[in-house]
Length: 148
Image 1 (cartoon, rainbow, N blue to C red):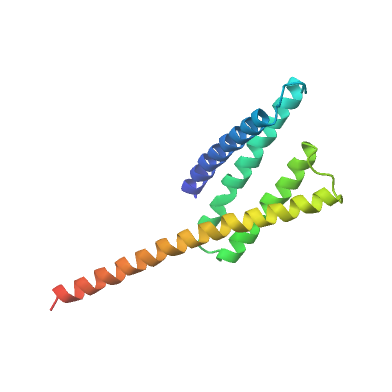
Image 2 (image 1 turned 30 degrees about the horizontal axis):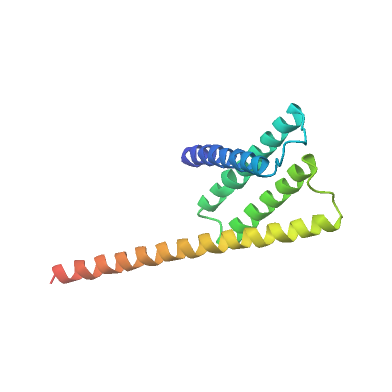
């Protein structure tokens, strides 16, 4: 359990830093001619919330380490944690207005992006498991051959 806590903290920090990097990059790309002035407090809030977006998405990935949980349970738990946090943080940043058309568009985009990321990870892990199983089979075969 101590290993999971340490991994969660590391993922939380890495995800948070990625969130800040994305926020910084997006603010630089969207700054235009600099005519829009944002108060320092608002900017700090955006960076804090962006840190939390990344931290929650990455930090909660330790859910997949619970061996007693099925992949479906872990995925649905992670999905709902990230979706609810996305809604809460989006509301704080005034990205989302619940019930508006944009809210439903952003929700659909979130679900599509989440699915794409999940399917890429799933295929990657499936390939790794297949290779491990092949290596185990090869070791068993070699072990039986030497014992004769």
